[in-house]
Length: 166
Image (tube, rainbow, N blue to C red; front, side, top):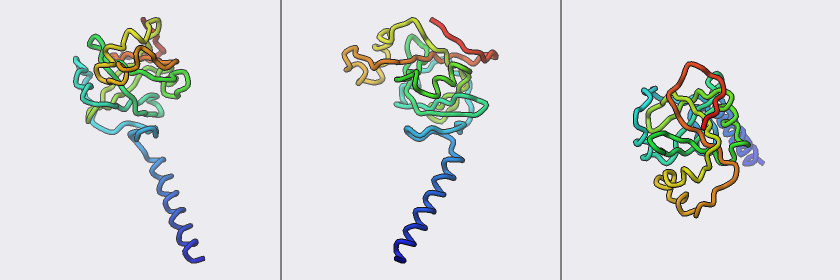
């Protein structure tokens, strides 16, 4: 009986610790979303090629109440793109459509930017570029999951309304 009581206190302590960690979280950890990204802000880069060194990045949306996620990115024709599989079901994609201001954490740098949804272009257009960084994409033989949303990363503009291009 004494062992069960001690075990109960340990479980309660761990639950409280996890709850506090959840409340004060910043960067996302794997599939667990975060809040405001930590790190020094860096100037918007003229060349995103350095992003190829990182398998995943963090993307922060909704500046007034930050929400950050772990995602992937790739460079196509010199521009950085962030895909979202199941884009219509993800919270962060809705936040970005409503307000395109984002911050990206790549390595130690945090880059303020704007994410513009790309529509009217088939995702297959980007397979070669994405496949260079992620071989599993190239090996998919052109079979892509349904509902892929694609965002092009641009320098942040002053206007904050929704934007659709291409």
